[in-house]
Length: 213
Image (tube, rainbow, N blue to C red; front, side, top):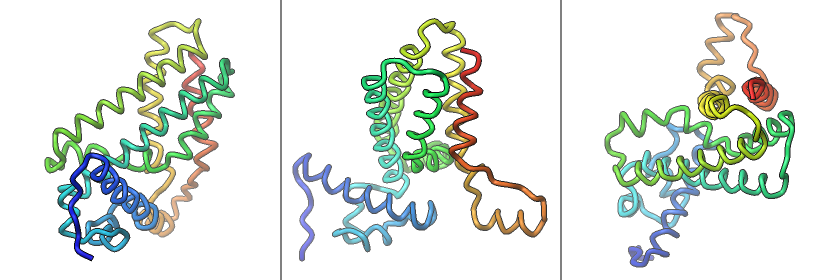
């Protein structure tokens, strides 16, 4: 079947979503290096050259995947605030941990974000700008949740918590998900490094950060 380029905004969005879905699957199965336009074309209705009509590089696709994760997580935060008006620190930590656990692609890609945004100049300014807008929306929603659940906390301490929360959680993935190559090195050096459970470390880490509120 001859490829017909999308003309309407809806068609373009649909094509991009198909590419992002393929990227999501490849990332789950093979990691960052496994995401290529050739591999994407094998999972979609696109030929490799036709993908360039929508994305210049795989990093632009990955950035859109992170953006989708950000939007979805923001919706989870809004839903949490609407359904549960009040929470203890333990309940809030548990809820955030569950949300992060279901957005593992966000954590995975956030840990290497600087590589394909700041180092890779092929990611368009427009896509970087769109991403930053969604990230700011998420931060605003997260700040609203902190204000809702801890209204009496000192403003400065809430601000510090918000900053350290993202710094902590966005850096967790590479620590708790070492590559097979690194695990092999660890085993050979017999350092006895134990990789803890994500849920346990994430929950207790967030709870510790909340202790000052």
